[in-house]
Length: 78
Image (tube, rainbow, N blue to C red; front, side):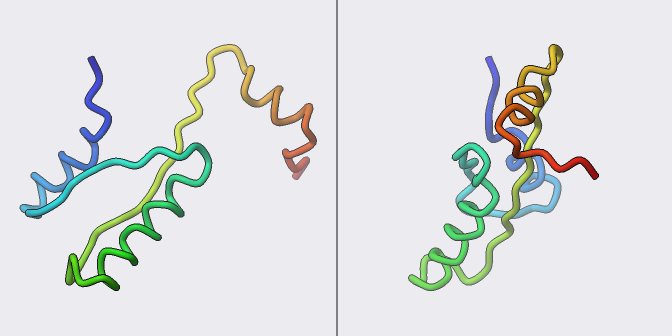
């Protein structure tokens, strides 16, 4: 069993942050989605301050993801 929000939960515990804590997943746009949600929370008055961010981990033992992106021409050669 994996707790998908474990990284954000651990950061909130270490920093003593109280309030909502959740993890968003929308493929390649998760970080942008998280920043947008943070903006909305502040704009609508649901929060005065937020801590948000995003990361992506493409762990791929066989290289399938990279070969797929390469075949689509989405990778730069530099």
